[in-house]
Each structure stands twice: as structure tokens, then as C-alpha cells.
Length: 210
Image (cartoon, rainbow, N blue to C red; front, side, top):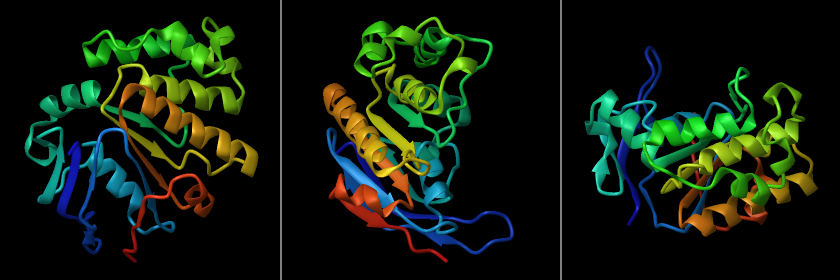
């Protein structure tokens, strides 16, 4: 079992406690986490990524309870084991496309994937030396996906990857994420309010906190 979530709760200051369902994910599996805006699904993603810490419950990834390790340990653990596709790319403007991916190698402290091959797999090899400021929205999203995959993570977390896409491009992005996750043997978790994604990922849970 790669990921296990057990009795997880979290409360933002001054807000009611969010309680999350228990679930497990194996390497190579895909899971969809659905929820309306305000349901707590983004909080759950941040807990899974170790960007937030819960004082109640466990998030166990590859045998490590990430709720119980220090921030410094978590930063290193995340770099080696977790790839995050944020809703907005958050690329570093001062670096070109290839350098943004090389940064993922640096933070993970391991070799990771061949960057040019990865960019080729995602159909953006011609943009390797381009400024990220010149990319289209779709190209920037693919670079964001490439950066999440660059260090060969064990867990890929994707936050609302289809929220601004039409049906055709929604299918392309989900299939791209699934294909790449399968290729490196990673678990894939997609967090979204987009019900269309259920057509492509059959395994799902719903976050229903109000």
C-alpha cells in the first residue's frame, strides 16, 4: 500500500473541523477526489502533499506518517516522493522551460527522468529553451505536468487540472496524466469539482464537508 489516509481531520483557524474519509491507494492506481467549492478538497490535497499538517489522524506515504515529521524532513521527503500539478502553473519566470524542470531534479536530490525525453513525451520538446512567459496556457500546463513528473515521484497530485478546459482537452489532459503516471509506476490523485473527470477515472471518493 503506497498511501493510506486514516481518521484525518483538520481545522483552519476560526472554522469548523473538516473530517475526511479513510482511503488507500496503491502504486499505479488512479483516484479521483470530488467535491464542491468549499468542501475541503483543496485542504485535503495540501494535507496529502504535506503542505498542511493535521494534528488528528494519519497520512502514511510509503511507510512514513507525514503528519509526524518536521517541516525540513517533509520538504526533502516531498521533493523525492511527491509531484504536484497546481491549478496554476507557478513556473519561475526567470528560468526557461528546461531549467524549470532541472530545478525539480535539484530539490529532489536525485537524477529523475531525462528532461528532453519527458518534454518530447508531452509534445513540447520544441519549447525546451523557451521563456515560460512565451507559453500558451496549454503549454504552460504541460510544463507544469512535466515538472511534477521530472523527479519520478511515487505520488502525483493534480489540483483542478481540467477546470478551464473544454471536453476534448479535458480528456487529453487526464489521459496524459494517467499515461505518464503508469509509465513511472506512480499513484495519481486528481482533486477536482469537475464531474466530467469521472468518465476517465472510475475510482473516486467525494468530500462533503460543508
